[in-house]
Amino acid sequence: MITIKSDHEIELMRKAGEIVGNTHKYLKQYIRPGITTKELNDLAEEFILKSGATPSFKNLYGFPGAICISINEEVVHGIPSSRKLKNGDIVKLDIGACYQGYHGDSAWSYPVGKVSSEVSRLLEQTEEALYHGLNAVHAGAHLGDIGYAIEEYANKHHLGVVKELVGHGIGTQVHEEPDVPNYGEAGTGIVLKEGMTIAIEPMLNLGTATVYMLDDDWTIVTGDDKASAHFEHTILVTKDGYEILTKR
Ligand code: MG
Ligand code: MG
Image (cartoon, rainbow, N blue to C red):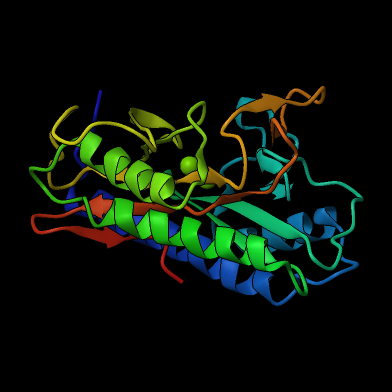
């Protein structure tokens, strides 16, 4: 079922989203060569708890971390560990927070030290792909318009669109209906309505779009070990467009 949020629910989702945005801002200052992904995870958890929320992904489907941290060819669902960030890496922080029963969800990709021009382009263009998806949103638009906008932009820039993982509705559950794919046909799918809240999250690869899961049963990596980037916002569908709930 696709839920339409009441004004009160939207207020709670704004607060949850604000905590997610603030957690990104807070963690960004710690991203540097030498820090471990577990240290980043623990800083995030402490910050979210201090903000009066709980980390949405902790124990979600059994996930062992408070946030997902994925490096380079890891697309999503990386488990925080003793692995240290290195100069030239890209690190993807996927952060969820639950405030009074409502979730916010936002992933962002960050360069560590100095990255190659190829990787830097991947980061810029994946962020841009997110904005292309967002700009397709307004009450009366079709769900397929979002995926079409993202895929068209990615194709133009010869980036691989991950199809196995998709955006989603969000509210009292992190993952609600509908699925929000990063590909599709304009004018198809459900009609977006005012008060829907969804997470839009392009995952784009420098090389092949193919991905597979590592033996840890969590981490998704690219088929050719080339880098992947991920940018995500939770948004509210409005009459004329959208409101970003996870802005920083
Ligand atoms: Mg996320
Ligand atoms: Mg998400």
